[in-house]
Length: 139
Image 1 (cartoon, rainbow, N blue to C red):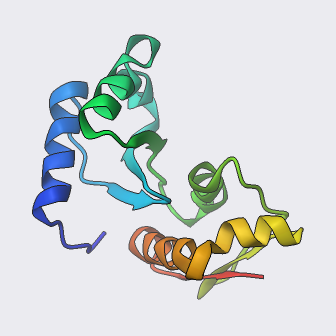
Image 2: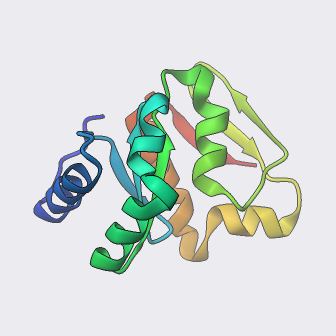
C-alpha cells in the first residue's frame, strides 16, 4: 500500500493499536466507515470479548468501525471486496491481469456499489489499486 498517511489517519491507527494491542498499517475509509485490516488469525483479538474493542473505538471516534481480514493476494479479492461492500451484494467478480470487474446484477445493487456522485466507486478504486495494483470497474 503506497498511500500517504495524514495526521488524522495516524491518530486512528494509534487508537486502534492502543485498544486492540495489534499494530497494523492497513486502514482505509469506505462509505463513512473506518476499516482496519489485520491478519485473519488476529481478528478475534481485534474485536475483543463481546466486540468490546469495536464498541469502545466507535464511541470515542463517533464513527462505524469494521475489522477485516487482510488479503494475501489477488486470490482473496472476491472475499475482501464482499466484506467491504456488505450488506450490498453482487452477482459475480471477474479478475483479469489488469482489472477487477464486478457484475452488480440488479439496478439497486449497482446504485449501491456506485454511490451518490460515484463516491463509493472512487473510494473502491483507490482501495483496489492500493491492495491489488489493479483497476476496478462495476458492470
